[in-house]
Image (cartoon, rainbow, N blue to C red; front, side, top):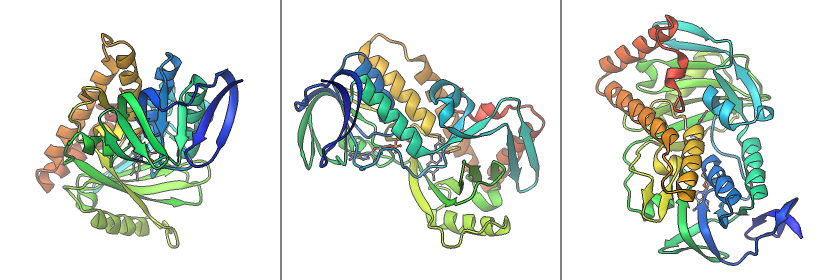
Length: 363
Ligand SMILES: Cc1cc2nc3c(=O)[nH]c(=O)nc-3n(C[C@H](O)[C@H](O)[C@H](O)COP(=O)(O)OP(=O)(O)OC[C@H]3O[C@@H](n4cnc5c(N)ncnc54)[C@H](O)[C@@H]3O)c2cc1C
């Protein structure tokens, strides 16, 4: 029979598409990937398309949904996400601080938005078509040398990839501390607001910021800040007050919050790799993490296939990552530092001394 398949650990087959012979589901894999987010699924697609026997274990029953505003910057959109998945394009960005407001215009869209459910489903289909076996409803609860265990059984690996997000158990298994992390909190309004907005006011959000990211039929309104600079419950209070000021009605909508990690401590530890949020590759400054997950997934897959591959895109990402962390840490030194950096940034954007793309992780 010719098919590729996404399996559920508890259910039977979810779907099949015509492509290539079904791999025999024994319990030994060249590569096991924990986590079917954008990072894990990108890695799975490349490795499986190079003939590797790949198992992806995802704890959720449905692939895709994730607490996220769905913002994709220009570089990410053009290189990694097909046009039909883009819900809205925003050539204009409204950026404000405590003292100034500017509209940054560009001929091509600076930031677009995607729906994480749809992105995840598309990526899972692509990985399955390439030959990866994807098990949903399959939380891994323990990791041993050479094997991982879910409630359905134990699977053996030659290589393990931790793509399991901000609270990664693979990272804990490697004994890596996570000291640099932020919190993101947002409300999904059931309507599509017209504009994409960034509000960087150190008097309110300290080193963080608030956003309005409209999608097709709904809008993510939220805020992000490094946990060192503001506790999540304060961030929520500030966000609520800002939304009230903006005339945004969030009554009866449940806020959703999650960590964003930027404590990168390496990506290869013998035969265990970390990618995306698990590796601490999101931006500490902006919270952008979809593209870092995809790029690190691509590059690590290529390194596994060919150990002498030079991962230039990963090196560029790491350079931007450490630049973002340095700016954040400098802003966090005092309210004065923060005000100076934020206002200079908005002014530089306003005067077009710095392009908006300077803030992208994948540039
Ligand atoms: C409020 C908020 C808004 C954000 N907005 C944006 C944005 O607009 N743009 C942007 O670029 N980034 C944004 N981010 C960050 C972005 O969501 C993440 O950086 C990105 O999803 C990281 O991708 P990943 O593949 O590394 O991990 P994830 O997308 O987190 O995927 C990890 C997967 O691993 C699974 N998993 C975890 N543990 C296990 C286990 N033990 N067994 C099996 N499976 C497991 C999870 O269920 C999940 O599916 C936002 C984050 C937050 C909190």
